[in-house]
Length: 193
Image 1 (cartoon, rainbow, N blue to C red):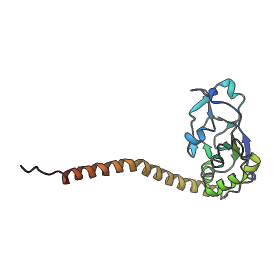
Image 2 (cartoon, rainbow, N blue to C red):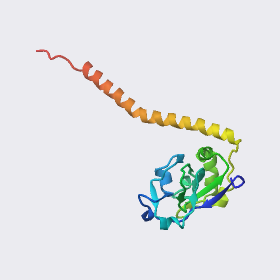
Image 3 (cartoon, helix red, strand yellow):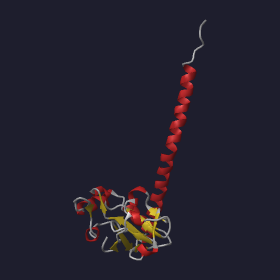
């Protein structure tokens, strides 16, 4: 990855710095709980004073988690598609490249990618991976037009899977209701006097 882009570590800020308005910010903890593959908005913001000290993901940069509780937490990625720059936490890297960011975000979900990241991880109280080590990760690099096509296909699959996942509970509830209706009909008898 180091041959196709540049890793820039974010700057430190704490949860108490996060506000309801101001400069958009991406906290590494939100990478696991709030974000998917892409984002145009953040759940939190920094004050103008705090944001002056930050490093920012610009539109089409990819934010990659570099610290976590275990090796599996490392390497998750988010394509920042927001028009406004977002301050990035120091437990993340901003990856700047000419790659299609949505494609790169999908690549950073693959087993092969995570296997390489885990190989480079440093285990201590908190697991981490350096920018130098992330630079050694090898990923597929098709032509830009093919990156766009692949990302679009994967986006459609992701949407389909999410739709199915959301519909399944409603279908299960409907079938359960139907079962209960017929069970009650079949097991309800007229009393014999």
